[in-house]
Image: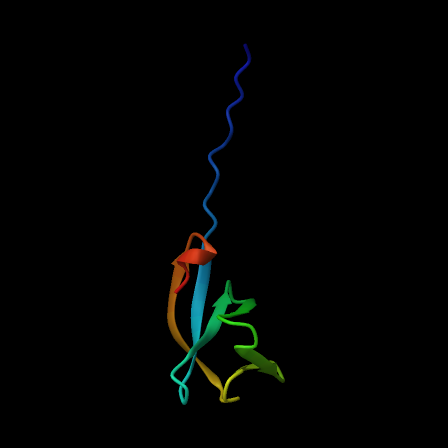
Length: 76
């Protein structure tokens, strides 16, 4: 019997940054791995000339908490 050994899988690590709206006080979404913008709810983030804006009040979004997660459900 031939047994194959698999190399241990590395866990995916997702670096994230929370995007918050100062006037609304709302967390609009997250930036994942410095390249993917994910809103918390549909339309929560609007990109205007490459800058993230709040989909609710159209104010600029600011970086808040940051961290590293091993799955998208662990972000935030």
